[in-house]
Image (cartoon, rainbow, N blue to C red; front, top):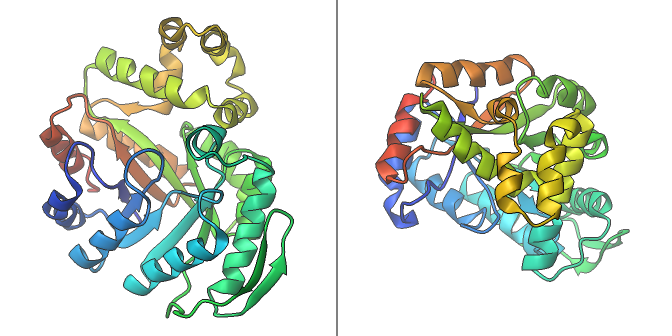
Length: 318
């Protein structure tokens, strides 16, 4: 059974995380999954962990396909795969218009096609094949990777709606999903198909103070689900009527009203909270519905870094 946790941990300097990561693996976490938005990049925390815990599986969830050129992305992937042969999984995806356009000044154009083209390019480049190809969304002239990984990493696709989920199953080795409920998994996984890995980043706030958990959850949900790709995802999932008030207030630039408009039951669906045992049982529902690799993203009820560490201990697999 794969059972992962998101690294690096918040509010702890990266160079101070070795003991934390060693403890996570000792507690039974098999996987360590990074992310890439506005904090650490996706590769360096995994590179450090590859030497600190030489048995753990390491994954990116996700690397945006727009923010690195194809050749640079192939080099980064090959380097990580060489550092942890057979233990590295690459997750790629479109990211969002906020990260791609607003933060990196890159046009967020044809995201589905860009992801498809990136998969096809990487499949060729990581074998050492010379790539001289004009894809729909970029072209590569005469690129050949000089360091070929011993073991080619699986390529997983960050996916939300049917088109990308089907791409994850058809051309990728599986899908990476997030910001969905355990019951939503039943709608999502059939689009990917059988026999594919399903990694889910599951946001967990282990506290029995439901009011505090819901307050934290509302801020996180408002930050994510007003991004167009996530809004469209939840429309498809059928959560449009429940989120209409939030979306309307957000468009009116009333952030306070938008946050307050998120119903309790939506928070309870999308944020796992309660006692450690209740949280563990809730994560188990995701797995029973088709998630093969849960990757817990711990959101502590307290900003104290030790609260994160204790939560990691409390949520460890039994």
